[in-house]
Amino acid sequence: MTAPIPPTKKEFCTAFPLYEEFTFAEEDDEAGWNIFFSREPIDTYCPGCNAHSIFHLHITGDIPRDHDAWVGSRRLAVVLKCSRDAAHKLFFLFNIEDRTVQKIGQYPSLADLNTYDVRQYSAVLCKEDFREFTKAIGLAAHGVGVGSFVYLRRIFENLVDAAYLIAKTDSGWDDDAYQNGRMAERIQLLEGHLPEFLVENRSMYKILSQGIHELTENECLAAFPVVKMGIELVLDEKLAAAAKRQKLEQAKKAIHGLVSKAGTEARSSTGPLDC
Ligand SMILES: [Zn+2]
Image 1 (cartoon, rainbow, N blue to C red):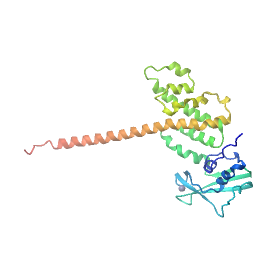
Image 2 (tube, rainbow, N blue to C red; image 1 turned 180 degrees about the horizontal axis):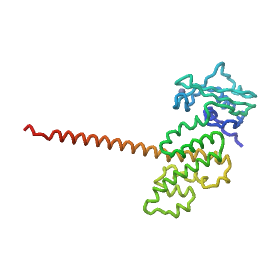
Image 3 (spheres, rainbow, N blue to C red; image 1 turned 60 degrees about the vertical axis):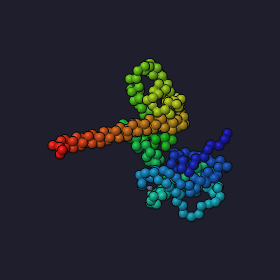
Image 4 (cartoon, protein in one colour; image 1 turned 30 degrees about the vertical axis):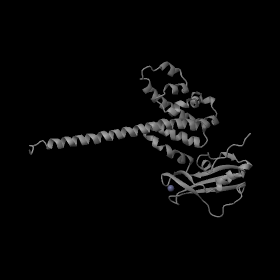
């Protein structure tokens, strides 16, 4: 069996659930060293800036040169400093037993770090769905598979339903096929009403047709990013459509203003001509 790919510093700090253990293989000592001592910049959400920022390792004292310097029984803290403002810091605490590393604390929370990027979608999701979307992300970040998946699945189905309501007014719509179809087939039938990527990769959504009792925590966690991405793709299109509608509205208003102004000027200049 090949050793699992070790997480990067960014993954371990900003995406890895608390208390989940990762054992580095001996040949991956450098990857372990990177978690604690690498100065590679990390791009992530900064609560101080309330925006993405670049963070660098903040360390007092010397950085050990030996790649196995972290191995043993110890606790190591990783502090990352925002490049915009040195007072903005992210804290992570790791427990190490031999080559097994476990993140045992962090500030800000994983949910805070991971929900920033989806805040934009509150504009195109109903309040309830948006709340459940961020809840799902928070749960998944803490390693809760089935629970997070239930929320995500409901939001995904709501979005597919919304596309269905439009699609069923199309001429030649086969409602029987849709009603009897599983999720992958439904997505196929909704071609043209859902993002192309989703339709092309519809087989990935087979898991949505499985009953919750048939799924394991790990299956749900593994499917989570795919379903989340599917949701985001649909929402990205909705955001783009909303932005387009807004621009058209503005253009209409601007044109209307111009026309009525021209009309006023035309009327005011309808007096006796000079010649
Ligand atoms: Zn900052």
